[in-house]
Length: 307
Image 1 (cartoon, helix red, strand yellow):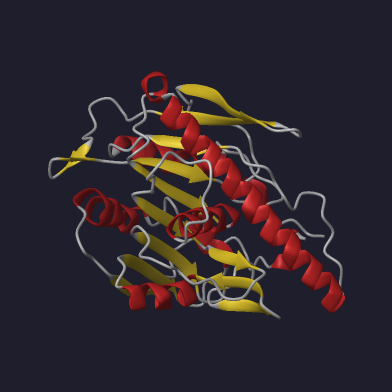
Image 2 (cartoon, rainbow, N blue to C red):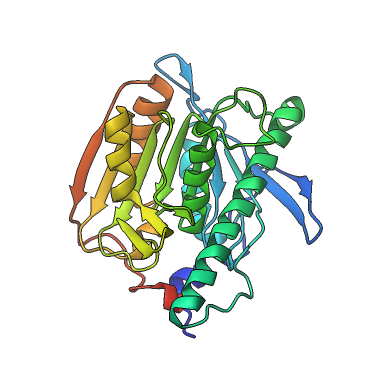
């Protein structure tokens, strides 16, 4: 099975930017889960129009197979966030697809869909444990748990979107009472379901979607059958429209799963979202098509390349 540079990059563990502190936030039967804290750069502006900027809680990508919370691939982006007044927390989570072999045929695909959903649920549980740890240790860690934006790449974006979806649908457990994220940033994400199309029961927090229209790894619209599959950014924003929710979606014309790695390349879009939708709390909906040949490409990665 070929391994493209993009997936390998998400697995590198070499650090170029040192986390200020590392904490054990959960002990599972199979592993220990840690988080890293990257503090705001000294002298950076930590408010916008008088309101405090949030901390970005980042969930790495890697297809629920691989990845590392503070991979070298993300370091430039972490520094950009820190320089612009945003603290960053990066977390471990259990990799529910690691070692799983997807079998061919309809039966194999249906079983894989169930396993994908389990991987999503386990990852969300670990996100909630990280939030609970931050809330219980606010003074020591120095992070305001009531002012968090969750961001994710690929599998991390799936996890981030599912974490918010479960909160607004009343399915979350283990979080501080009344908790919700201040925003979600999804880089090539969607929501996995084995019970039909996901439906928001209430308005979620503001969500930023970046997705390639030709993504072969995480569906831009939806893919699956018999009620099992993944529903991507294009599908989800149609629901948000009906609810009158705040969101920004950037549709990258003919781009593939490259967009999962566009955190640094699209900083200006994130900055607008973080300042206006999140920190200012402005009602703001953006639906834009991006056709930019200067953006990086790592090849047309598909599910076959990962599994």
